[in-house]
Length: 201
Ligand code: GRF
Image 1 (cartoon, rainbow, N blue to C red):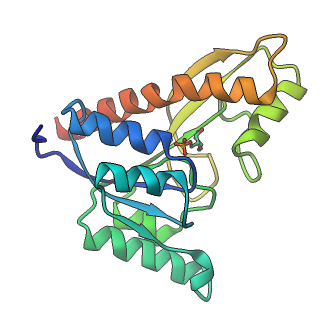
Image 2 (image 1 turned 120 degrees about the vertical axis):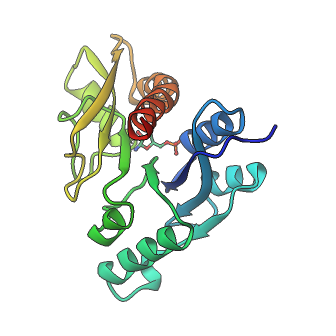
Image 3 (image 1 turned 90 degrees about the horizontal axis):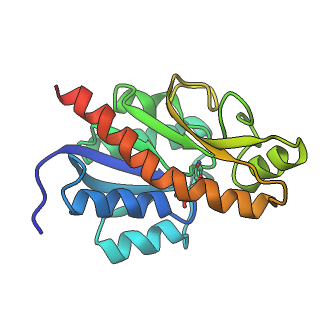
C-alpha cells in the first residue's frame, strides 16, 4: 500500500518497541498522517530495532556512552533529527532525559507516553515496572497512561490526554503493566492523530 505524504516523524525508544510498531503499522495503513522516517535508540539489540528491521524503517543507535557528556549526545540526536528533516517526535519508552538541543531541533513538537496518570507516579526512577509496583503497593484503585508534551523536566510537560485503567484487587505489577500497555498503544495513536490534525489545520 502506498502511503500519503504526511508529517515527517521520528520515534525515540529504548525498549520493546510495541508503540513504535503500532505507529509504523498505522502509518503504513494510511491511518495516520505521518511518514515514519526514523527510529532513534540509545541501545543496541532491543525489540524496537527488530521491529524497525521488519518494517523497513531506518534506525540510528546513538549511545550516550560514545560521547564525552550529555550535551554532546544531545547535539548528536538533534543533528540527526535535522538531517532526516524530522518535524515531529514521539518518545515511546525512552529511558533518559531529552536535551534542549533535541527539543529545539523539532521546535518543541515532541510528545511522550507515560504508563501512569501523571502527575502521579512520574519523575526520575518512575519508569517501566517501577511505576506499576508503586501503584500496586500504594493500593491505588485506578491507574492508566498519560500522553503529554515534552519539556526539559521529566514527565512535566502539558498533559494532552489520559486513559484510565482499573487496578484490580489481585493485580500484580506485571498484570497491571500488561493491561495498561493494552490501552496505551491505541490511545497514543489516537492522541497523535488528533495533535497532528490540529497542527495541519
Ligand atoms: C510504555 O509503557 C511507555 O509508557 C513508557 O515506556 C513503555 C514503552 O513500551 N514510556 P514499548 O517499548 O513501546 O513497548
